[in-house]
Image (tube, rainbow, N blue to C red; front, side):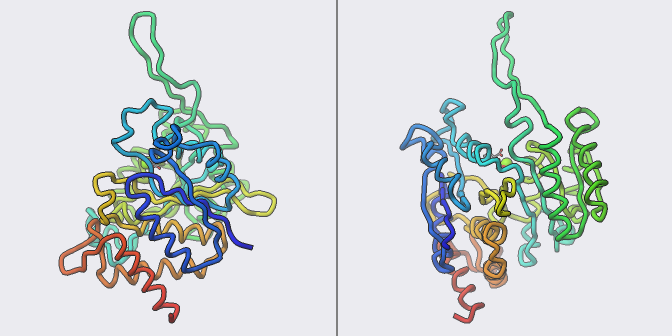
Length: 364
Ligand code: IPM
Ligand code: MG
């Protein structure tokens, strides 16, 4: 049975990095690929950052692969039409509540981090970010006029027990396959939603995961610890907004946003499969779009996560990951990670190199 993948390249560098992923999926074979518009690209054609028809396709697909959304061209659009709303609708309507953001330092890139090499060498941490709740979606929200002529902007941080428990379960399960340590992050010192978060996760661990070590940390301290001693972490589980901030911070430890993939997962259905969307952590980088400069690795590694988590194709995912390592070890680098003495290449040549490394490994 062929696996249906909806490809949404999006804006900026999205289409060019996704083109490399398509080559790779064609090479592996067995997928039925379709393509749609999201973000500014969708707005320009349909007047909305995600057409209903595309949303319906996403709900039907076995997995969705997304490039990136946004750019200065659409900055002045009304809030509801902004490219980011397309991505947020996908997350919400597919109920992708668990966002997995690994921060992994490839040996060959340890020197590319802005932190001292020994602080990050061997770093392998996973941030599990809650993705469909919290202040991103909480009601009430909006901007209102006050009688005294002032205006008031409102967003609401809100979590229910079930929202906390289901994302915490994902974190505990992942930790079991890693170093069995979860650090839960909130601001229980100032926020009731944080108090509830801490209580529910503690209860869940006592009920079902006593084999996993659980610690708690305030979000501000976590930001500090991530740049002070990042290797202390195994799995971090946190809410939507803190996860947004901390995952960018963790990403930069690895030297380049151009290297980091992510997976967003929904609940398991009766057949044990989950709705899922895979996307690089980097944005649309409009400043370098269309110039064959972007690093396609984050998008390629997102496709690898798709094979691993949605299609049970661990061997193929391992092959892609290893091929990416080979390319880095060979000193073939896009501009974001190039160092002196290495071979600077563009997006397409980086894709060529990954494909060649795959062929070489599989004896082709
Ligand atoms: C991310 C991005 C998004 C977010 C934006 C593009 C809406 O920053 O995926 O981290 O804030 O979640
Ligand atoms: Mg972000």
